[in-house]
Image 1 (tube, one colour):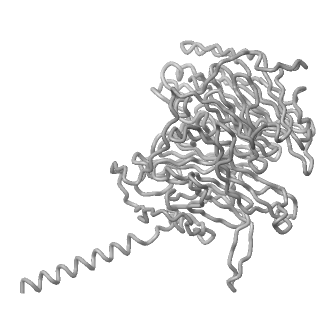
Image 2 (spheres, rainbow, N blue to C red):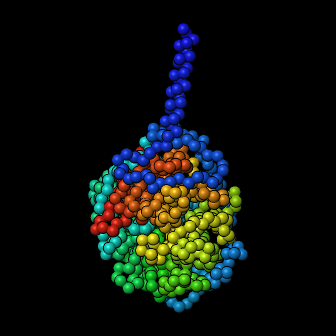
Image 3 (cartoon, rainbow, N blue to C red):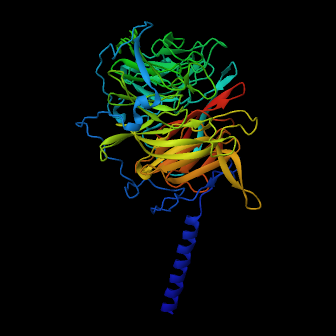
Length: 617
């Protein structure tokens, strides 16, 4: 009798274990009540053959500290080691007909080197600012992340905390590309002298959200509650990009104009916003005598600041260096700048045109500048990566990135290889002769930052004719890539729009449709590790946001142009999102995270759009 009882007990335990195993092997579906179908999502077979964990995260996951699945980051480049750039044969500027000039203010005098004779050297990305939060586009001079801190994730859900309407002007609403908000913690005496409402000055610290709207206004919110921290500041110019705060903790904000205030005026500008007095002043006019481009002068890029010098590339084809002469007294809140000479770098190359022309390359920098030590890395509208010595303003190398690159280059140190790498993604509106009419290729490239040599590339099949209107369009990527760490320490994650997506029909034949993808590439060789595909209007202009917990688990938040916001396990997304919700309007702007809080604004075609704060739980 005893043996029979034991046998029955053992059988019951086996059945229970088997049932739990079946439950745990079932992929988790998107969140209930989100009102969005997951049918448009598909998962591509991995072509990398290295084994990976197949465990699916569970809704009651714990935050137990373990390094079992964490992939070591590349070794840091030694601080004591010199870093000198010497162009590879294929990256010599003369190969592409490149020349450059250095000018000061609006004079015709040309200099052989930077007339200010500065000696600058950026620190590592993690050391760009001592402030808590995200103070510029993609966080730092490496442009390596849109999140600050770590998140505690147990339920794998997204919950709306607050949302508010933001206005419209001249047909522009909400936050356009890049449109990433800033989130910054103000503390101590600086907080007491800010131009915030009195109830916030009395706090020990304030986590402030700053959003620049396409309607020409700057909006301010308290992160956890959404309460307005100060009155809206009108700039009276459409703001498409991401602002930059002075990384020294000085409450001065810099933001550029994204399009023309007046039709056919070619008048765009860059502004400084004093966050103590809440006042605005113009510091650069894009209508510049020096500029080679004469039909566009916007400032979509997010500048960098080092040692009181502002580094700001413009779509007019000029890179500006300006000594700010900042004066700040934290005790009294007295803050001012007195910009000095405008030192200007301009370039020329084969097939460039001063105005937009079919078959010609356009001058201008629409993406933001990345920096390692005294070297600047800029992608231009003509389809090249330029490396410029910050101290001399001499052009070091030029690398073809495969097409117009609105996405910002991202830097990765690799001390083991004795170098730094640059990752770029491109767009194209050029027909590829090997493809049928209306199609081309965009490129993801890994480039040696010392030499400009291409380490690997991966090309993607894109449409260059809008399938709805038949008009010319650029397919590819406007989104800035993410270099993974933790459980995705070997991946580069990129978002694409206008890709040609293969879809089997009822008879099993392959057809093609317009869509978008988020893809993960192996950083060692460019192989595709996974991809998420969406069809119709649900493609991606917004950059991928990856949030990490304390043990290095990575969560991908993807926002699309159909208003969808989805949460994935970034190491192995699977067929379905962990959670999904509908924001109601398309999203071109990039979200940003502060610990568990995520902030993003929609890109409206209506009278008003909205800014949302969500909590990852």
